[in-house]
Length: 295
Image (cartoon, rainbow, N blue to C red; front, side, top):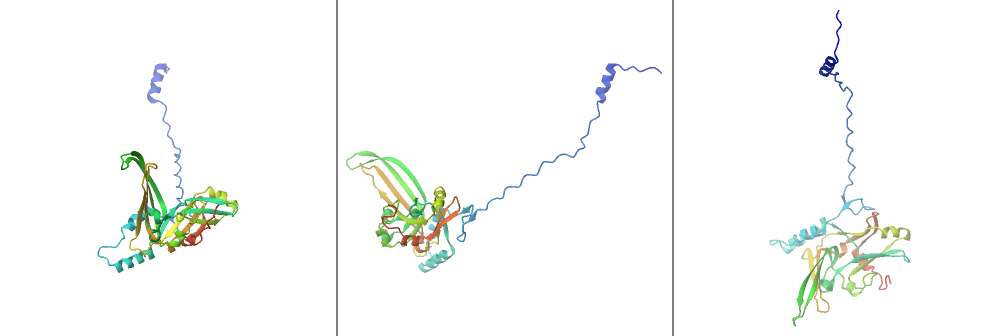
């Protein structure tokens, strides 16, 4: 039998045509790990008065929205006075505004182991209305705008004037006893009577440092007023510029009316979620520090 001799060329040709058999992947494919479950969301709750500490996250009412909506609930054209009064009373029974603000200032008294806190209380002559007729506004939201213009007097002397408008929106509490304005209460940060309400909070030195580094807030609980003929209050006061003092200042006040006897307030440290004090505006007004407080 003749011997078959394969040339190198023929062998290479066969191998290149046929090639090695393909290897099939028979192993089970590795599946990607299932996506991790999303971290549980902390519920944002509307805060209630029965809690003993602040929730991690909570919500309160927006004061500008409350003011705008309340302003539209005035007496209707075809509504009698008695019907309007009854509707206001029912509104007060079913509604409580929950509003969050900040204190004007605060400082720790190590000797007395007390936190002395000032709550801004704007009203009276500062709002351009006599004390005994004016609600006092507890500011929740304060904004400031400014602009410059050229002003001149009757003799034609001109000067550049800076006009600043401070807008306060908050609770307008009423009635305020005339005696409160007359006491000229002196607090740590505000010697002018009627500009602040002072609160004294017992606070041990061991915890005072953490509180002072925290985020102190005021949480108000306020049903709308059923007494006044209007559901909201607005007023303004203007300081005119002069050549020697070319500053034009305007303070505007907008408030949702509430009865002073019904407004409750919490003083809290939002960082540690601690409720430092539960009280009311009327109680704070009755228990103001003496004239030498903090001196």
